[in-house]
Length: 411
Ligand code: C5P
Image (cartoon, rainbow, N blue to C red; front, side, top):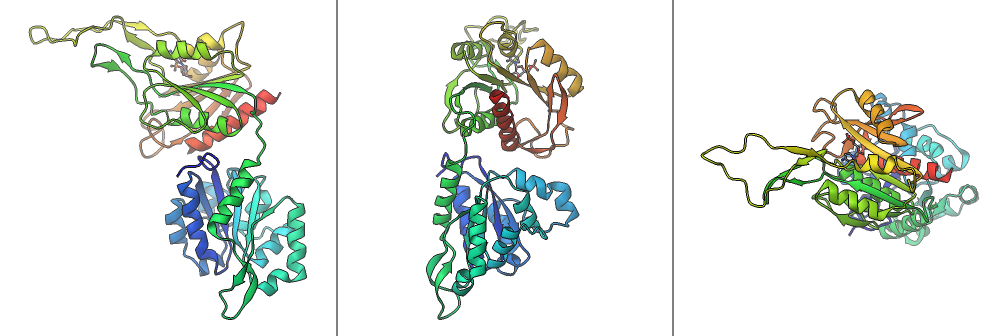
């Protein structure tokens, strides 16, 4: 069951070297079934208890473990691992890992990520009761708590070592989930009180009762942006064209078919503090919509399909002199001359930002490509210039755009 708190959130799970590491496999599953993505980092000792293969398979992500792995550093890098996480769970946290954290050591990937992180951190200690109650460990716990680190457990009870009992058992996976929920729910809501309109998906422009003009937009990026804005506390209204994906959690949605319906819905939702136009609106529609299905006359269909231009929703809102949202963001899907075409749209449509992406088949994005796929590589254009973002998931693009919206609306 997807949970609002976890949906689309990315949890960086640092697995330390302890027998309780086997419980982290279940933790990954529990987090993912709630809608979170889990990025695992294992210490060298952790790999003695659970295999990176099981961890990676459950997380459906690469397992990161080596600070000096050139491929890992090239792919993501420890700084990005730290920055891209919404929260970090250290489970199990050994006495050694806690000591390193408390003292700011960073001599492996796990500790380097922890030192570079600005996301909230939850520690689930697991160790022998004597090690837990040792003054050194308790000093480290106090230091970490003063640094703002949250703790769950350890619980008391039987230990893995025969005959040992006391406080030191790692909290159960569902207790860790509950503690992470509290942590995520207590994050600041920088967009609380802001109204934001988002468009997403393609439009369908009817030719006759059974045919229409459409495009390959899946709505994944626009929907992800709506969800990310809602997670920062905004009241988000999404106007969606026909898509096969579900409505994002905590977002009000109006479903439309055509560009004109989309424009009417957007206009009716203004005023707003910000508007994000991620929809791939059909620029053209059939001049007339036939009342009956068009037939082949004498074996031949109509030779031409007269088109007429659709209203440009973004340009209409961006160029308003009255009632313009404080922040207007457009998208530009291009197959060539990304910067030139995107830059021209910035001015013509009166947008503060244009999120330009290369949707050509040779964009270098694997799988289904940008249109329909789950990954994106964008260039953010503004009057200040162009910023190239590395390839990342559409959820990550959405998170970053939402953070930008929050920053700009706070100004
Ligand atoms: O001109 P082009 O379609 O490439 O512009 C893309 C940007 O303009 C997107 O942000 C899209 O949502 C918006 N747009 C619009 N109405 C149209 C065409 C595009 O809002 N009719």
